Length: 416
Image (tube, rainbow, N blue to C red; front, side):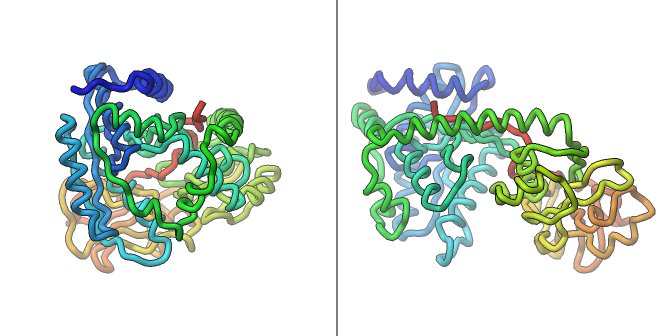
């Protein structure tokens, strides 16, 4: 094995220590694009894991957006293999050119990476974002009018359902990563999209000065520490004030609540990728009351006692989709089944069929109507949360409430 550049090894180890704890023999996955940043990350992660008796799996995604992408993915996979790193080549399907292509591609890429990690039984996915990416992200958020939390930049740690996203390179400059690769005789691919001046991030990359000269990393870290403290307090408040139900709603006790806590609760129940508008949340947090916001309704708790129910707004619920094992419907419910479902099977809201169950449960109508239900064409086959299964239907189906963001997961972790 070629010698490693000594300055990065301890820096990487220190970053990983801050992102723990890990299992005794950590199993890691790395999102390997083939560029310099992810290639350096893959080598650093390999050495770090091997020193602890662990393993690394490189996940290479062929996004199919450029004619050369398939060949680039193949070359990247071969390079990982030569580095003695197991590799899995993944392919994005049904990704068409059009509006918001970059955002759609990013979402699809994370979905396929998450699925691959779940199949491999891996809990930690490493991403190659570095110090310059952090500065660019901050600049883009300033331009888009982000407020306090957005100005904290990217978190070094993000927990999703069953997977931890780790960014151990956020404190490392890209020039050091390229020097590391050169010292190790490693090759990488230059992504031509980085030179496309039509993209905002590319224009910023060419106009910003070196991150170390801007003072932005220090400012970002300060805001990040503030965000971390606020999220810690919100988690403490939510633990004492809320009950999250597996049917996909929450009970909130009476009284004022912190805006961060309420925003997190609404985001989780709505299955949204981003928090709701802070201005509206600040108003509601100071005076919690019935309202509709960000695809969620706040309604009186009724038979559940004092306080409010936080429920999914029926008008915002996703349309029915094909039912397949591991399907996620309405961004919140994952279908778990041990075998394939018939071609005409769908998962969607219970809707008007809720009237059949009102005498069988204490759930209010606003919750019943939004429960996930399995159908074959128009035949109601199962409502797992009500323990309802039609006579001839396979009862082995489970539908789990798994929103993309837990109401109080790992708090924001600043770069330094």
